[in-house]
Picture 1 (cartoon, rainbow, N blue to C red):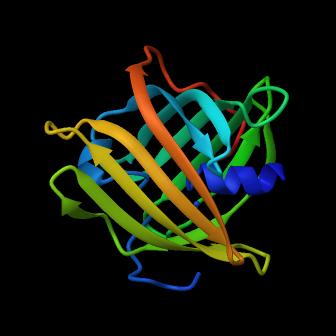
Picture 2 (cartoon, rainbow, N blue to C red):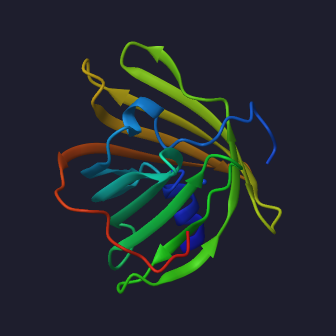
Amino acid sequence: MQRLVLSLLLVTCISVINAEPYYFLPEHLLKEPIARTFTGSFNKTTEIQGTIYMHSIVEDGSVIGYRCWQNVTGMGPGPLTLYGTTILANSTYPQAIVGPKGECLSPFNEYVNCDGWKRTQQEIYTNRCSIKRIHTTIEGEMKLVVHVDTQSNLKALLTETIIEGTAFPYDLYLGASVHGLMPKTDCPF
């Protein structure tokens, strides 16, 4: 169950749609690191809250990918920490659950290819991605919708991941900024 939740929350990461790399958000929203609190729901029945961080990975002055770290409460008896890295060059998305001391638990990889973010209304962006879990037969697709305000500040990330015909909606409504750096993990990605 935790692997399924991880996959859905970090899409929340193939058959090819348009073979664009998987950006967690429209690229202009990722220019600065994101560190925000959130509230929301998983599967429209479970209320969740937590903190999300998104940072770029820079090599030789160029962005080569993004990291996403989430600490979520409401998904079980205690907090669940999720971590993933999207690598733009080859559309891989390694992910893991992170233990209380930063240890990398249950890692797995996916190939994620996307249509690319499109502005569908003044304050709404959409993207659609296909997902293929590496070394398994698990495949699916992910639909992402981002709501921004009139100054293009991120307000909400709404996703629906469909794995083997079952839909898992995940909605995040972003709140206050969090000061500090993304917590460290022992994950090699």
